[in-house]
Image (tube, rainbow, N blue to C red; front, top):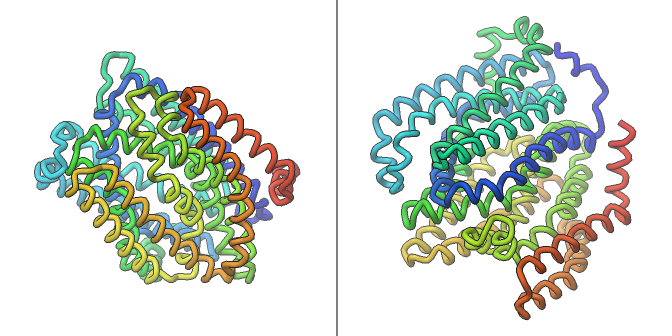
Length: 489
């Protein structure tokens, strides 16, 4: 069996840090390159990339038919290895089906989306699905064996490859959506190859000994709820995520999609940097906590960390998003910042609830997940259609954000209820941090009312954010404990 299986579990904070370190470097690379890329590529290029990503994202979420989640659940590593083999089989089947479907219907799809410029690159969808599906399965096997350092290396390499290719194409005279799409595929191939190579080198012998058709079929039957219920739930969730890109393109234009894509990219950075790492480690730890009867303690602690990390910067972005984007990315992108302002509060609630949403999977409440995702899809669809009919992207995004606040708020409270965490315990976490922000928010609003220069406003906001995090690190006992765990591990 993989050698890590016998090791004593490392502290939660240490595992998160291993993932965050790689993700942080990857995000820093992307962030540093973004002001250059937004001056090389126009909104329409980012719009085409967003459309391609939406199509591959919708199909990619069911590339393994959700069996990748089952990799974490068996006690015996041999069973997990056979589920990993089952995931590879599912990826191959879905890739072939995708290729056939696009061959027959890509013309109609692009016509509906008003995205004929995407036609030359639509053939890249099946290979992208195959590569990303393999990465998804390997990622969960990697989490089970707690080799989080492998994933950090893969992410950094992917970021370097993708960003380098994008910059090279832009400076080389090819600042098109096709260049952004091609760079994304190259980065995915490199990261999957690196992660797969590391896993095969260290776990390959165990995998070869354990995998069998009998074991694969047994896993297919044992965890049949994942493809039968959770795959539809995940598909609905992903479609609801990609609806803005698809409908904004259909009702407006790829340029509007480009603004939205950049706005969401900036909003999602905290999720990718911290929330994603916490979610991955939390899934594994929560499965153990459920067996040990300590799930409520783990959930409350993770909720508190997410609030401390996410609330302050999201509120600042909600107030000065337009100024921030015009300073960092150029005046052409101010609308993207306004979009980010509209979606800021919803983003914070999503940031908190998303890592915790794996609780219903651990408790095998797939029915709840399906019902929630149906509600999420319907409310988002209605919001965007109403805004589209009224020909106002601002109304569309406002309604989209409002529906998200309601639906994700319900998800978060439900996860707390399932875990045994009361609403009164949550209020004691949220209210003090809202109190910290009140004078800062008043100051920023005052500066905007008196029309202070955008550069000055952004500078003040950055200084305040740094002071806030330094204060929290100095005064918060839980965060200091986490840092001590990291230093001593």
